[in-house]
Image 1 (cartoon, helix red, strand yellow):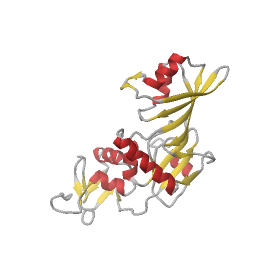
Image 2: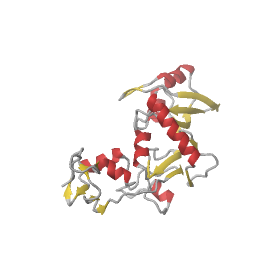
Image 3: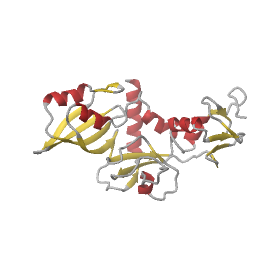
Image 4: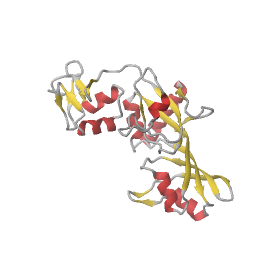
Amino acid sequence: MASSPKKAASAIRLHKYIAQAGLASRREAERWIQQGRVRVNGRAVTQLGVSVDPSVDRVEVDGRVVKAQQQKVVLLLHKPRYCLTTVKDPQGRPTVMDVLGPVPWRVFPVGRLDWDATGALILTNDGDLANRLLHPRYGVPKTYEVKVQGIPSQEALERLRTGVRLEEGITAPAGVEVLRRGPKATWLRIVLHQGWYRRIKRMGQAVGCPVLKIHRTAYGPIGLGSLGVGRWRHVKSLELNRLTAEIKRQGNG
């Protein structure tokens, strides 16, 4: 059986142990547990809140033993269009892992970019970092260049900035500025602190400006720069320090 925190000082919550092993974020690990994909000492665990002692307990995900991972890796990928932001797709569609190619680390994507969206995507084996980046409390800003149909009115732009009513409620304030206007379309820079599903497309639809293209230029202080489409690089120590500072600043806000 899984260990209890009272029995072992080294005990750790199961979902956190999976995240620290570099397999997924804590949130994703919780889903794996609920889906019955995780076994402890040969027995399936489907309830959250279970703790394990890594020095004693054997943890498996999909039949593979989970081993602690020491080296933390954070990568930045320039995601191309028409691939899923996931590690594996049951339907066999291309994923960002196919774009990344063979690397010596077991990393996973943090958050989502739509199938047809492009731009900055962080991949890591640091489950704690991924958890903070995904948690609504921290709200790390993400910057996008968005092409919308037509020319948005000032009223539409103001609605995007102050909040648009969607199914979940009213969106949080967003930074919105016009980059350039064309005869049939407009490019906007949009900065979001909130990660609702397909939020940009739904916001555009709600204000009468259908979204044609989405390109994420930066994740917090980490920008694409000259990184080519489909290419990746290590996130630099200075960038990671700035990202950590941003997380702390947002968390204390």
